[in-house]
Image (cartoon, rainbow, N blue to C red):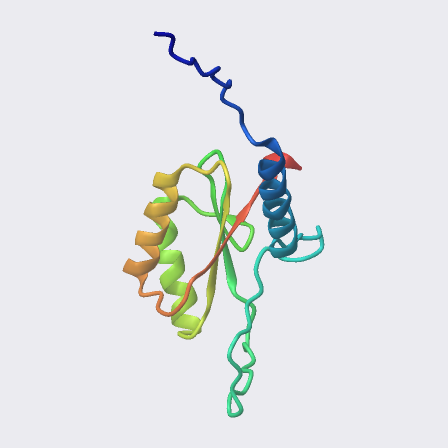
Length: 140
């Protein structure tokens, strides 16, 4: 008895249907993605507005407390050792209790010194917001 043998077909991947699927995915990605131009911010923030808020004027410029990368501390461009900083701050506050201070630290200033200066400011009774900004003096 002779059985009929079927010839087996090689398995094939239907590339035509895969190309259709990839084309649809590509169109979807292109349509749904947004492209950021270099002048646009990475995200937009719409801040709340107030109808009753009034801008206040600061009566005096803030006293700038500078810290350099080599541990030097200056109060309005006058170098002050950390040991005498508290007394100097108390004198400034005695003449004007509402005096504002701004902390200007170099980016390479030791973090420990910055913390010590903030502690001295608190001990001297500096209240309110302390403006702080970094100065990259070594890049100049």
